Image (cartoon, rainbow, N blue to C red; front, side, top):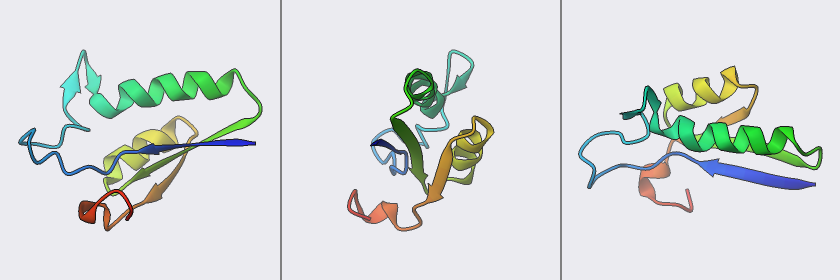
Length: 81
């Protein structure tokens, strides 16, 4: 079994606002990558996908697509958190 982790907990310090929630072509930026990964795992039965984010909106968006989402409350401290 293969496991894909979609890490969506960044700080967006240089961007100036939460880039994950920034709208691009009518949907939040995180959804562009998430939609692609959901399409990928739907073609395979040996893959799972988990979204890791400290943002409730990102986790809720993942869950509406049937994707497991977990909180990462300390992600501002870096990738290892």
